[in-house]
Figure 1 (tube, helix red, strand yellow):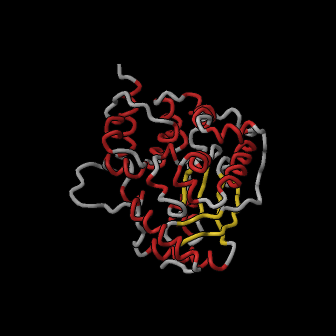
Figure 2 (cartoon, one colour):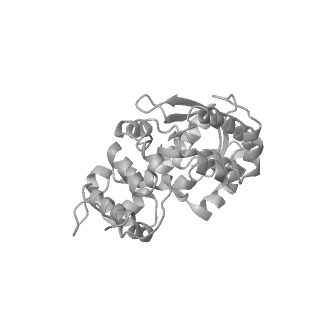
Figure 3 (cartoon, helix red, strand yellow):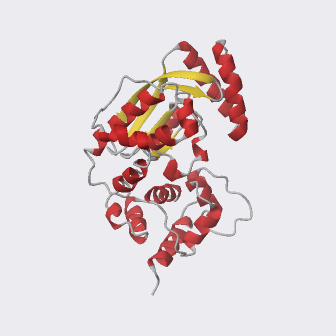
Length: 301
């Protein structure tokens, strides 16, 4: 009799064969020997290692997190029922009842793209990043350099050194963010994604202080001021909207608070569209230069 790990691998392989490259925005390529997507294509779309994903399909005993499973489900365009089945095979029986609640529709992805040059993102109840446009991808640091299970707004704001350094008003922003999270927590107590996230967040002393204070908030007047590594400091207002087709999702848009920020967001969009975005150490060196220009009121181009 096949083990659950083996059944999981067989299921993933079968779903991969049903998705064409065109459906996920990939070119058809040449000499494609298998129907549907290649393993490495699924790995890239889900932002996991190709070797690790291969092991998962081979039925080896690797244990994907709920967040990683959601990313794989998104990459394979799984339906609600397929997501629930995937979660059960992976051993997340309780989470299977909530599987698909954070699935992102094509219409929502289109909306995110149409909001550019304004950065925009979609988060779930636990503040994990579920979708974003290219302006948000490069708002602080390249979000795709983080594993899916690390793409949590509260975790990044409180524990990631680069993320914290990018926020001019990081303490005020983090305080408002945790208060907002506690408000959401009170309405989704039974969601099985909370215990592992809170256990992880409680390793961060500042989170413990803020969470245990009991402060609850919905929206805050504290607006982010972000040192963008490509165009300089951005003064922003944020607007949050509950997604009508899935009330566990929130669409958040970052709007410019002044004309300088408006111009810098347009410059950032131009850099993205023309392929002139730098990453890693290059971006950190660029940040130093941009910060110097910032003091003179110069927008990087």
